[in-house]
Image (cartoon, rainbow, N blue to C red):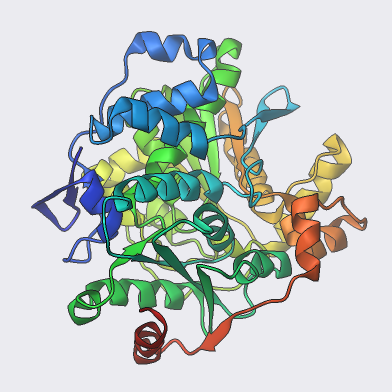
Length: 434
């Protein structure tokens, strides 16, 4: 598998290099030189394959022999050992539940696949690896769970102080061992900027072997393609044009869907659903991309004012606004609308959406008015119990808490408070990473 930088198509690396580098030296993003087209026979017969078989086939095509098939099959089997079922909401709508992994969020797919592939390549190295990851909510918990006690790998998670839910914070601050948490006095964008600056700091990287587990790393997007195929498989028999509605923050999830479409999955359209952080819906309407400081909202994992993966979306479609608009619609919604949607869905269907899924539901209903013939699959990206206080307050009830989350309440938070100043972050790395 060969990949190039979005800022320099002549800068070519293989998958292993892209996996460990995270970012190219020019601060672009790695993209596959070729996105392979899967056979139409495979697509037509998806219902004959297990989720793991589908995941292996997609990964095999993308990696193109960089990991031997027998090794890759084992890695996929270990990483994707939980399901991604769809739940029928009404005759035109399905909810794709992506919260059945260990951290109860869709980030488990990417984090576990990365942990397996990094562990595979790193076992041949005598140098320890430090993974830096910025999180607006769910990424941190998934990465912490995915890499916990992985030999030779240290994980440093940066998260915005006071801007993640209590249970999200507990997931990334209570494991210890090879997992360290830094509580940043700033926003997610500040956390992401610190990570990017560290990767571009050649002096730092000469002393510390760094990689990233954010969606800036291409290895996160490959496994996120898996569940688009799996979801389509489950509704294929209906025979309608399928639209995926994607709650979006850093836009890695939607980019993975676009790549799945490039591989031959017959997705009719995508809907990007955002909260007040609406730079991509604004771009889709105006043709102008204007990143800005993020705003804190109820759907905090989508509080991103300068989504990194926008560059990949542009790259996929040659930065052509009209072509992008043909494939994606974008809508934004307020916290008040999100609360109302959560109440509506529970009242009508007795189904509990988390705030992010509720934003997706609103986007689908808006899109559906002009396209009633389409069949919608809304990505429910996290278990509602991860936003317990908000969900209980909005629905006026106490929802059930899964055991994996319930156990977190008794655990002690361990995090280091730092400013958004890069020098302070760099000093912490020098002092704590040996």
